[in-house]
Length: 448
Image 1 (tube, rainbow, N blue to C red):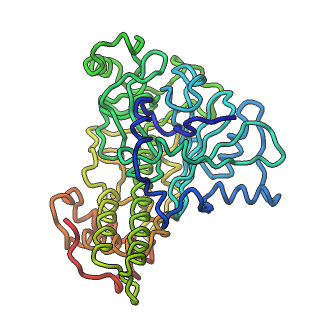
Image 2 (spheres, one colour):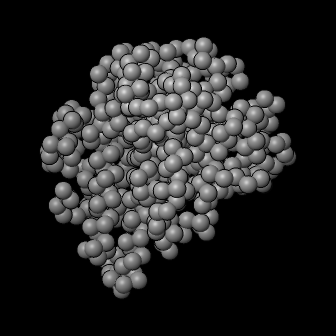
């Protein structure tokens, strides 16, 4: 089977975007220090495949959903994370529509896409060194199923300066779909913590209560795309009419084939945060590895292991972007409380590492912002821990400067003294490296 444009399952992307993305050169993934295409992944799927091949693990085949339930269990992905995408923005466009949405599930480091009666499942995992790695799994019963790694066909969309930061990454987008789920050209784009709710979730179903905060979820034009003369004006009218709390999607499609009838608003908010942070971690990792490699090739590498001044600037620039995103700089505020319907919020919080006071970076706020303690929980991830020492050390130093109040610039004004104290205390108890790297951090002035 020839899989064209495999795994766009996290992206509601316009087909017109693909040609532009494909022309992007050069790719950071092609750098000799990365060698993305030829490097062997060590991600969750690679480890699961090794266990299957050794006979230590197996996947059960369900007559209705194929390997989906078993794979979610193997990857420790909660069913409550389910998000439903009805825009036709994936490989299996002939099977996706407002009446047969695509289901997306995720954990901290793995993402799975499933389509009703689809011949494959689409999977992305976050490799500690390579970033996002893409796979497909045929929905055919086998004694030892095989995950097929996908390369450049996926990276046409999933390696873009405009959507993933120029590294193999994850995409969550918002689009304006017509009555059949095809994308109507509009100004929506990649969704991150900074995206106002009013611009989120186009092409997605959304269950939950957001008060009267408008958003683009659950909206499909009753017309065909070419019949809409002014998409922006038409969308504004639709959003005002249709943005309301939705708890039951059964009026829109038959939810029986899905593992749950929900497309939880809280899960979708966490997904947007997680995908963007994963991409920034990958970008910081790539830049550090490339800078160190370039030092070696230029004969600038130092005996003490320190990098050159040029490499330092490159590393700290990438590290600063990550620091600010992890601290939720410019996060779009919530005007009213948000609640979901699937139980995802409670399940997500239960998995948190807690300090002696019972606090966790996975504790949700959902009244004025997403998290109660504003520092990304992905600081505990394998990919964060695998970042090269120069950039990881820089991130820890910058976190200490901000959380101690030493850096009180306006962009960090959203962090109250209580926020800073709580996050610092949580890290000191639950992330030993945050404290142990103190001695090796320099006192250089942070980049503006």
